[in-house]
Length: 200
Image 1 (spheres, helix red, strand yellow):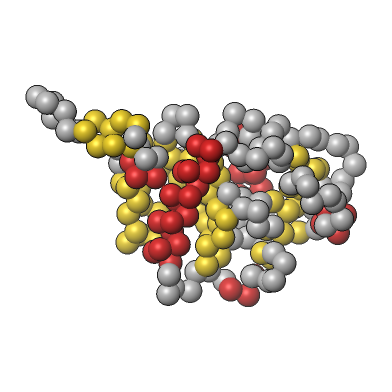
Image 2 (cartoon, rainbow, N blue to C red; image 1 turned 90 degrees about the horizontal axis):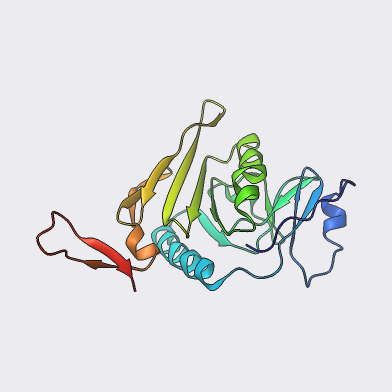
């Protein structure tokens, strides 16, 4: 997503949020507005597009529905966010305007300006409202962290590198080849035990 969050002391509600200028994107966390402009970098969007394609292809014909930003997720009057990607399996939460309540899966792709918020404020929000699986993608380090909601909270994440196949707890039969998500080229190394992965 975009730039560093702008914090203001006054707490705002979703009703107020809906009146703001459409030229800028905002999120509310505990009533505090976070400015999400400017638009994400192209690398962010490429990774998001590849992840979306894999998830949406797998979910075709199934009950769960995937969404990409900007889609409002309304947890309550003071908490409204736009995850990069989300999956909702309880279709009663899907309205014409937004998602009402916690998605089953949320994916956030880090950028230098949003990394702290995604790992701190948004992770705490998702944990508090019981998002079952939270996936954090780090384009700079080409890693993926998967946090699963167990016994009321997130424990230590499962961490995957760009040369691995990632599994999603909600969809265990789906294996995601992360070298395809990150658009790495598999190169067989000469006289080496395994392949290398390089940028396309």
